[in-house]
Length: 438
Image (cartoon, rainbow, N blue to C red; front, side, top):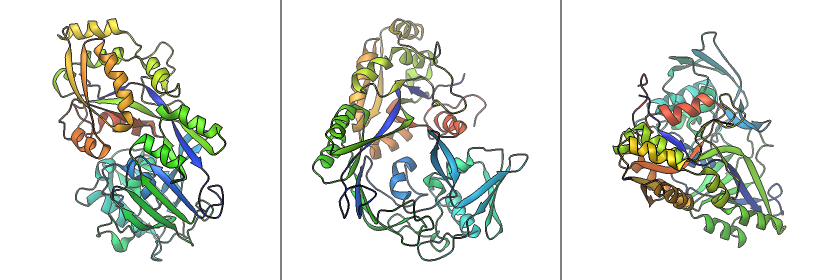
């Protein structure tokens, strides 16, 4: 029987950034000599192929490295667009993907970024021991350079999601002189910034490269990114002028709106592209039974969580594809609805009429939501014991299979097949794969 490995508990979240007057010579981000931003994950390794969380490391590594493709909003939908690669096309059988490169890109040491550099970097991503990129490029059989500015990927099967994967930090192009080096504190890229200081677990400082090939994209000479895990601490740092911009959570939406209404700050929001989620290990205890997993879905009152804890900013959903991408369906009459009686009936049918216990992880940023979920599950006889842990500790514990569930978030991608594969078919997710998948 196919196993459910992810449960959407709330959902489509709007990302918000609160910006204050920046330091330096001007009063706005576009005029300033420097920008200090607070991110919710502290910096660790600056190596794009050796990082436990590509998403968490993205703000840091994105400044240091170029990639063949990029992701930008087009009509409000995240879309794969050209970057170092000016264009690309698939063969008729979908098993060869050919990129044509720009001719004006250089690494920070002046070395031209050509096709051979891309091949060397991909070889590093695919074959370096403990590479965090290996699992994402399993469809790649080989990478070659037919000429100086053409790169050809040979695939073992058609893969429409490869241009998207190459747009993530995992597709970062490393200077061929440094492919064998430890890049954790000494990156070697061609991005718009160079790393000038790094304090692991605290902050990273970047200086703009003067001759970057796309000078109009990045205009601030100096950028500092601080990793501040605590949500309230980030906002307090913004209020006190220690930083210029901060990511705010949905639970802080009213507070962020009030700051913007004061006239001293600007609130910027993005489209709904991520979900609050409980990842389930469908290979542990009661969660092996699909009726138990279904019961958890019916026990969650997504509307109540949205109204009481998310300030009405997280539209409830029970599907993993955001509106606007292929595969999304209207939720009228579709999906899970709050039905505690049905949840109790399913639990009784599965042999848990007297209740059950589930061991779960959460993180500081999600702890408030965890309290609401815990109360709703308790109402149908499910005791979910949440242990609060920071992301750096929670991720390896989840991946080791030592807990039943992890309440975190899930990011959507422009390529829906990639979203589904990563959340349901990837071995990094705990539990049994559906029948027919290896």
